[in-house]
Length: 353
Image 1 (spheres, rainbow, N blue to C red):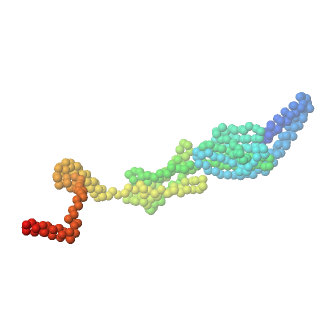
Image 2 (cartoon, helix red, strand yellow):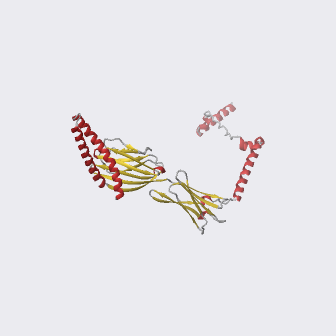
Image 3 (cartoon, one colour):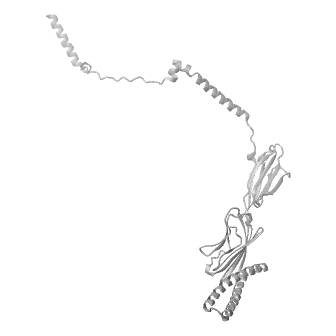
């Protein structure tokens, strides 16, 4: 509580100065317009200034001591744009007195402020901006959050009906790149979590008892951590009985990832099947080559040509012409007998004559 009161008094002094400068400037201009010169004007001006200071001090101290103190912890992914809210309440700008962000980062402290009818004050000069939304919300924007932006962000907001004091601790988070491999002629298994923040935790799951693993952690120049664990492998061991378990800190909790090493195990080479496939391929190629070289001789054989090479031609179908009508083919039997008898009678008459 004392620490909060101390910070509040510091912000209070800044707010008093800002408000007093604005109000007293206005009063001084009004008085100067009314009175061109004289001791009365100076005396009245001093009284007005004293009253304004006292009134502003009482109001700001009351607002500061009654403000709500809230502590928030955030973990932000590196490279993303971050928005920090002093409060989620919507406050009209005409009700505002001032908004102050006191920022303490690694080896640097700065302040970003805004007050009614006054220009913004920024000593950070690193891209952070104080924004005002269309619905009355006030927020601090941090573009492309990096490790150098980690730290405490204290927001002090005062308005006519009260105030808010929010302390936000923001830390950087980065997803590591996970990989597994075999080294030293497949006698050592290596599991690595590179470029992570915070550093990941690695352990091995095996079907045999071992305490020979060697785990090292190294920080890079940009503050990221690389963790590498090496595990010597017994002879004639199957990689299907080995897993690398990585615990990665996440903004929503710890995330466990399991990397099986079975994918790195080489399957035994089946030489009989390989030789059989190669032999069949060679035989097929040789047979096709022989047929290709002897194609001209084979085509000279008439039987082979008739069977294989010449296309089968169908015999032409002869069209039957219509036959002339023969009356004898359709003449009835009675007419036939009558004609025979007439021929017989004619022959008899010729003979008798």
